[in-house]
Structure formats: structure tokens, C-alpha cells
Amino acid sequence: MRSDYLISFKGLKQGKHHFEYKIDKKFFDSFAYDDYLDSNIQTEVELVKKPNLIEMVFTVNGDVLINCDVSGEEFYQPIQGDLKLIVKFGEKFNNDDDVVLILPYQSHSIDVAQYIYETIILSTPAKRIHPSVIDGTLESEVLKKLKYLEQNKIKEEQINPCWDKLKGLI
Image (cartoon, rainbow, N blue to C red; front, side, top):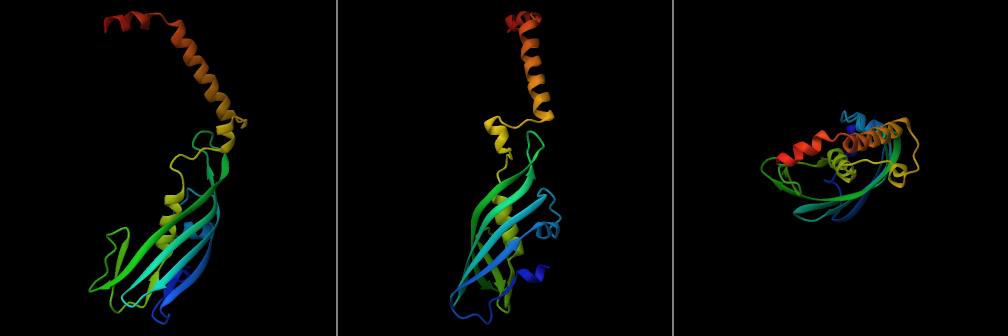
């Protein structure tokens, strides 16, 4: 599968070239990444070949099926993002820089799977909250239990006067 994401630039003419990929669950399985239950993402790679370097722009747009961090409910999270990469040529391979990739002079292709993967992962919000949790319309057992526990915590704080005496010690 990874060979599907191998772009051979050796035979390309100078100028712009476009590549498109449809990213699904199998793509993430190849990276052993199981946070996404499913995905439907369109990825475009714009490659600009110049005499001494290659400029690449990765653009992702679609959605991934994930679990809400609050309720545990599944929902589709919209994904949109891009990544810019400059490919230069040198004596040996070096990908220590986030923006510049150095390939050996004799290279003729580049595997873009890792860069597509990183673009999608970085485009996913760190906190994943179901839209219905935000607007208050989601009904689930987990949310009911959280509300119940929150209300009892407030009641407990209001009822227990011994804590007031300890606060006076400070």
C-alpha cells in the first residue's frame, strides 16, 4: 500500500504537478494508529519542481470518525489543514527539520505517506468534543452521570460546614 504514496520526481518536467489521494481507515491501519474509527479525507499534493529543489504543499480536507473525549460517543470531526515542505538534495538523507527534507543526490522518488499522515494528525483538534455536547442537545448515560456527580459535589460542598473551619486556619 505504501507504494501508492511514492511520487517519482525524476521524470517530471519543471513546474507544477498535482497528485490526489483518498485517505480511509486502511491508511491509518498501516501506521498502527487506531484513534480514528473511520475516515474520508481528500488529500492533494502540489509539487513544484525547480532546478535545485522541490516545493510541496499537502492539503487535507474531509472528516474522521472519532470518540468524544467527554461523552465517549462517536462523531465525525471535520478535518482541514495543510503542510508545506521543501525538498533539497545533499550527501545524505536528513528529515530533522519540519520544513526542509534533504534527500540524497541519487534519489528519484519520495514517499509522501508520512507527510499526509502528519498533516491529518496535526489538523485534528487536541480536545475532541461532540458538537451536541457543546450545544447541550446530546442525551447519553455518560453525560447524565456526569451531571449527577457534579450536582452532588456542589451539594456536598454546600452541606459540609467542617471545611469552613479549616478554611479559617489559613
